[in-house]
Image 1 (cartoon, helix red, strand yellow):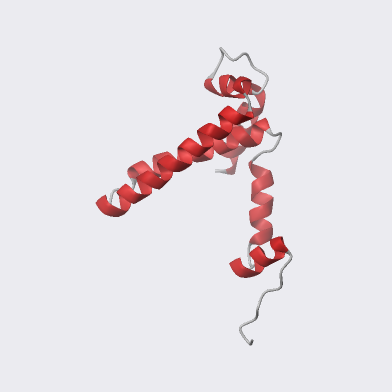
Image 2 (tube, helix red, strand yellow):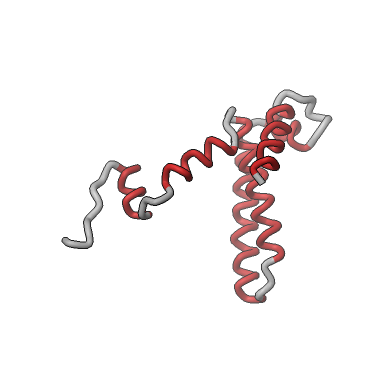
Length: 117
């Protein structure tokens, strides 16, 4: 699957400078970061709504499709900012093995209360 993400990163980077008439991604980039962020927010809302529907219906097909849309638009945002999926994976890799509380405290510069306290 990493090959898929790498291929998508390449396409998104190429379309940053392409003619807006040539593709959806090129048009989004031409409209600027605020338009891309608007799409990310819209897709995030659709994920939330699809997840609520899936919890009630037991059908998760739509939530998976909406998450794919969110990931895609997030990758468009990353490319617009000269970043890619490997930048995100490096952060996730560094967080593996840390408890969520320890990782969050490290980001904020706080000490974590141990279980012994």
